[in-house]
Image (cartoon, rainbow, N blue to C red):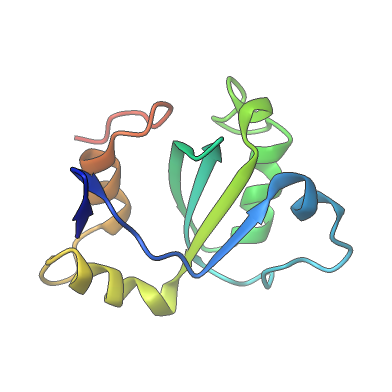
Length: 117
């Protein structure tokens, strides 16, 4: 689905980075899996998938991963959890079990994702 030639995605959850860091209890379960989207002022910087979302996001926000070049720019995070990914595939008109992360990276082309095609 698109709006103004951009892919429109319904997210399950969204957090301001400062709020995410301050939370004593993680806003997502440690064993939660799904897609995550890293933003700077509503500009998508990076798309990823993880089977341990909470730990992966913490690593990104500390610059301990491939986000080392831009982690300080991230100011919001959005999530689509595994249980919603089939709905996203349907929304985008995708058939079967295509790699949704690969598809979104190639369709949207976030600035800091390494090309996966």
